[in-house]
Length: 190
Image 1 (cartoon, one colour):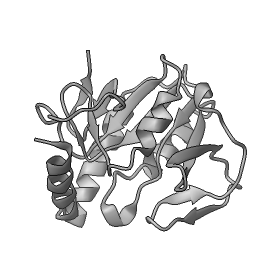
Image 2 (tube, helix red, strand yellow):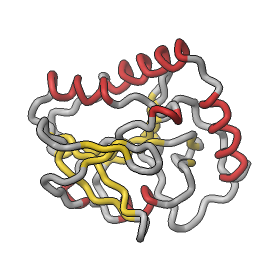
Image 3 (cartoon, helix red, strand yellow):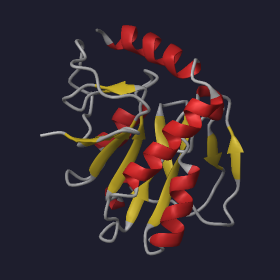
């Protein structure tokens, strides 16, 4: 299937999940993410979920990291719609967060962190294929962002759904994931 077909299919699938199903899937994601060893990670970038889109709930993961891996610095982004870029901020207790026009909770200001400082980026996705290619919302924010990260930065896609076999129209600017985490399994891309 193409990106456009998969985007329509998986947005619909995600929108049809019940609250009970979402809670169960989020619990599975948290369990899978708890299997990672975060001790060598200094800066971990995560997304803040769009609740109305039934995106994976990363708040529980953030809480776990703060409790069990307090040396890890959590980084979150603010979208810059004018140029489809992202600006990254250290997630501190005192940081002011606000909802943007797309329903994304974002930092207003704070200590900025360069893409090259990031050790791991957790990437939201609707679905991915078995080669690590991802389907997001189609604006290219994450591909532009990930292209600026160090080559050794681990890119971990977070999805409520298992990967599909293949995305037909992967482009040269698409940045594949190194790992896909789903509520059932962790897929390491070779």
